[in-house]
Length: 185
Image 1 (cartoon, one colour):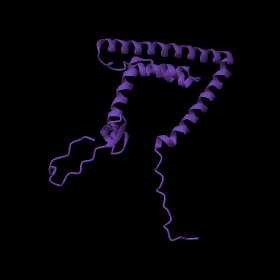
Image 2 (cartoon, helix red, strand yellow):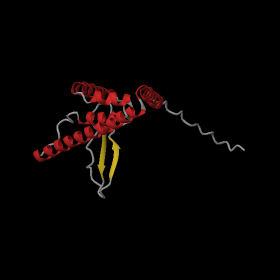
Image 3 (spheres, one colour):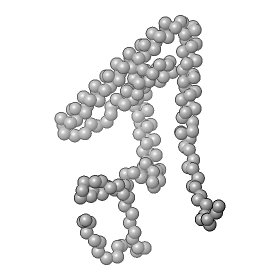
Image 4 (tube, helix red, strand yellow):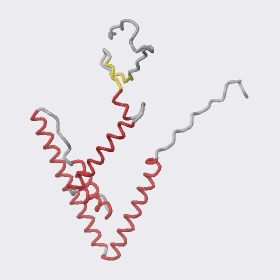
């Protein structure tokens, strides 16, 4: 039965990013490769050797994470005592990531985790990450994560915070036409 009302049209779904498309495939391939490599090593040297390698990786990763966490907490404590903010992470995040990768069962993750524990690799990776993040934030268009810093917060008298975006409706000349009202409720 038709009522004469227009049929609702649904907007097209946005395209999935390449990361969301290929990340599950990459994780699955990594897991298959890890299991295959563990079986090859177990076949060549025995299951007990693989068990000891995995146990050593787990214990070593836990020690690295504990050390990096202590150092990060110590840096934070010193900065708070000085009355400032902590300067840079000092590679603690990459140390923790390396320790986490060591704790994950698998030889490839252990190799990548050990690479992240080398200071020159940490410095190069942190510089690359910083440059990439800066570039992505500069290239971000309106309505994206990079534009989030342009958002405004309005504090209402009842204490609630209202998120908003500042949009200026100024005439072509660029100067406002007359006085602006006060910003009170």
